[in-house]
Length: 324
Image (tube, rainbow, N blue to C red; front, side, top):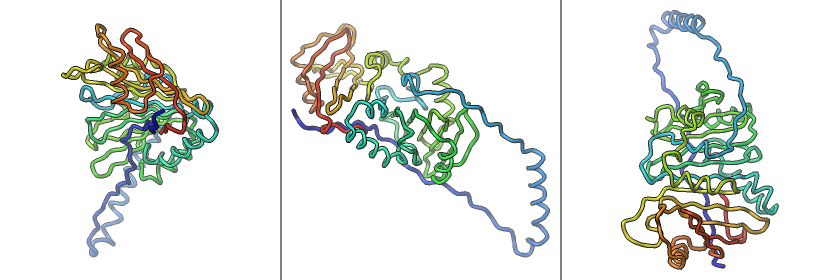
């Protein structure tokens, strides 16, 4: 078996520091007499106008099915959409203890970079990441699990976030620095973290609205939608759009590709699938060779053609993979 570590992380999330606002000072000669009047006015105004903001009662939310969260926080360029869904709870249940702990260790070290603040890895059941590879500095991450809002609010405050109202029953936190906006939506069952340009308008609101309305990105991309439905649930699933190539090779007309991994104790069953046009013809030998060239280390113990799907699959030792 050809040795190769499988890098399964979709990068795109990094920690940002908080920002501060500067203020101006009054002249020394006016301070003693001028200060009380404006202070009193601000206090009176605040007392007269401030009303307690109601805290929405959280309803049940879930990352399952993850397909419903494949939303695009901003318009995307064609052929650049990609996603990764990792079920940490499934890996913990299916893998050896040492492999599961190595996964927990990785996420323990990376939650601040991925979400913008530290999240206890024990609270994470699954994580969905959506990236737009041709849109700089944009990513969208949803975590499902069991979160302690009070404890996470403290972590958010320590990471420089400001509480900024609610989006439905998700409490919103924001942080802006160096032209980058990070928005976090906090719920006892779901955590949403969006990183984008500071000029972006209401990315969290759009994501939640699209999820509620079922306006998922895959509905606009038949090939990717087919791939998501074909893979179903797994320990790890990834998919991305493909632009049909002008040159001719075995998979030049494919419109989407992805991987499915299922951990089985000390090994993992891994599948690489391509979605072809309805009328595409294939040459098994040519496709297997193409897979070997483009996806070094992908086993080809099994070959399947099912309608528009072409899949090669095989078993890999867990020591050769990294679920990030």
